[in-house]
Length: 67
Image (tube, rainbow, N blue to C red; front, side, top):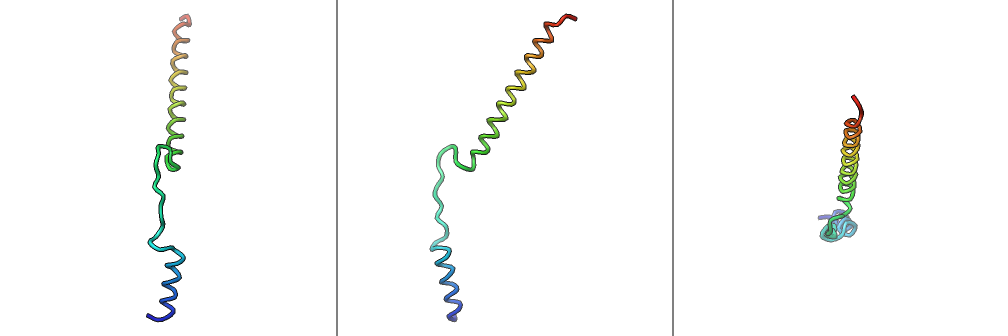
């Protein structure tokens, strides 16, 4: 190995850190990755309940109308 290769190897070891990236373990139900999923699912559920309620109310109103 020549001096340039050794210096380059040492530089990238120092820049990138020893042993790679240290990841902090995620815990809990609402981690950052799942917040959007939970938001989309809950809003979809609320929208679905609203549509079902609107259809139900329109059906009740249609039954009360004279023919």
